[in-house]
Image 1 (cartoon, rainbow, N blue to C red):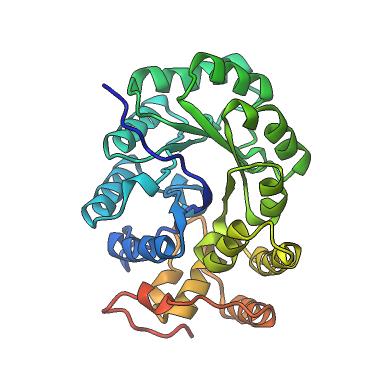
Image 2 (image 1 turned 30 degrees about the horizontal axis):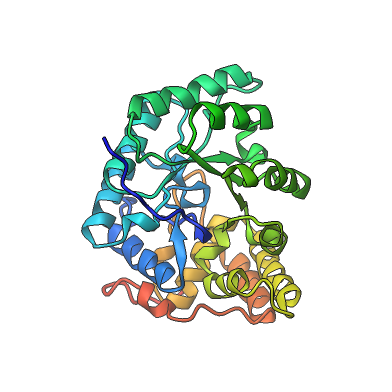
Amino acid sequence: MSAKAVAPLRGVLSPVLTPFNAGGTPSAARMARHCRWLLDQDVGLAVFGTNSEATSLSVAEKRGLLDELRAAGLPMDRMMPGTGACAAPDTIELTRHAVQAGCAGVLMLPPFFYKGVSDEGLYRSFAQVIDAVADERLRVYLYHIPPVAQVGISFALIDRLMKNYPGTIAGIKDSSGEWENTSRLLQEFQPRGLDVFAGNETALLRTLQAGGAGCITATGNVNAAAIVRLCRTWNHADAQEQQHKLNQTRAVFQQLPIIPAMKAAVAWKSGDAGWRAVRPPLVELDEAQCALRRGGLDGVGFSMPGAASLAAPDRQYKEQ
């Protein structure tokens, strides 16, 4: 199949939070509203990422949600769905579906259950998916997150994949938490055409200064405008001050389990308490935690302009 030119994904993307209905099923309507809110602030959509609770969603749920987002008129060329799974058939199915839906790229974890696996095994895993999908439109963004997956993506593996699948291996999200790793990726692979994204906004300024593509960050879900502003004005005189403020807000969210904390913030600012729902093994914040988070966010001047649009029309409940 001939490739269709799609602009590369750059700037700020966020692993879009997955809202749930009262019965525990994904709420596609809430998710679509959240995607529109993010797009309005120029944040790309890394649906089914780590902070989307992706590993708690089935293949069928992810396919269904992607179809509903597409049917809602959301631009597929602004999407980078997470498709990496432990089972190759799942990764192949999700990746093929994303490509056929017109997504600009996919964010792909390595298979992460078995630990201590070799580069050869990981290479075969990625190659198996690319070869099975067999579509020139496929753009793979590697997802390096050893603190969580405990399976990393080495420089030798990146080099081999780029050589054997030129154009298909489009970028990497570095969630190592180590600036030295991000810096080396930028030095060695960005000049060869690999777009390097910081794993969160705390490294955004340094990444952009070194020629990186931007960041893919959880707190883009809640602090979108401020993160995008730094991405657009990183060469302005106040860039370091902006970075400091982003770091302060991020630190408040990281005081608590970050997914429930972000969902509680959306519930607070939208007035829709249904946003607090998470899937086990995660649990919602308790009232003491909510009070701690609200106090900390008020202290750093946090706001979510337009958050009222995220509330379900029939769920106008105030967070208690």
